[in-house]
Length: 240
Image 1 (cartoon, rainbow, N blue to C red):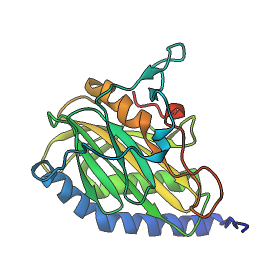
Image 2: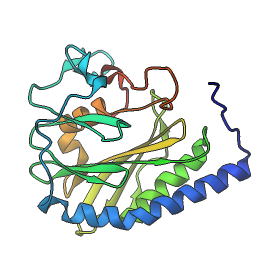
Image 3: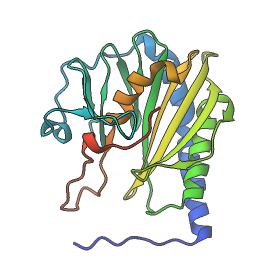
Image 4: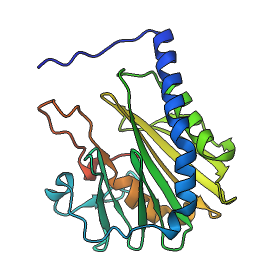
C-alpha cells in the first residue's frame, strides 16, 4: 500500500505545532509529579527480554567518544529496556531504575544524581519544520520544569534528530543540567531528555553515552515493509 505524505503550508505547520504543544502541556504536570515521586516507586529493569532490535548485534557497541576512537563494547551488566508499544528501546547502566509514564518512561541513577525521560506523541502531519520542532521542544520543557534557561540553539545531529541544551529547576527544587533530543519518524515525535540533578551533566558522561548511544526508535510506520528499527551500533547522537 502506498503511503501518502501530507505536505503542509507554514500556517498549517504552525497550527500543528500549537496543537502538539497543548497536548504535551496537558501531560506535563503529570510527568513532573511522576518524576518527583518516582524514586519511591521505581522498578528495577532487570530480567527484561532483549528487544529484537538488539538481539542480532554481537557484540553491542557504543559510538566512539571521538572521531578517531574505536567503538567500545557495552558493559556486561547493562539493562535493556523495550517500550511496551515497541516504539523505542535503550540500555541503562547497572543500578538505574525506571518508571513508566503515559507515552514514555522516566529513569534515574542509583545515586539519584542523573536521570531523564523519553516521551513520544503522534500527529497527523509528517515532515514538521525544524522551527516548529524547536517550538514544540521548548514549550514541552517549560511545561514540565521551572526557571528554564537555554544553553544552546537547536542543533541538527548526524542522525537527523535535533539537540537542545538547557538548565532548569525540577518540582523538588533541584537544579538540572540537561540536554534534549527531538526527532520525527512518520507520524510520531520522540523526545529524549537527560540531565544531571544538582550535578553537572558531564559528571555522568559515561552513563549518558550508554543511554543516548543505545537509544533506538521505530523509524517507519508499522504498516511499511521495512526494518523499523535503527541499529544500536550506528546511533550518532552526541551525548557529551
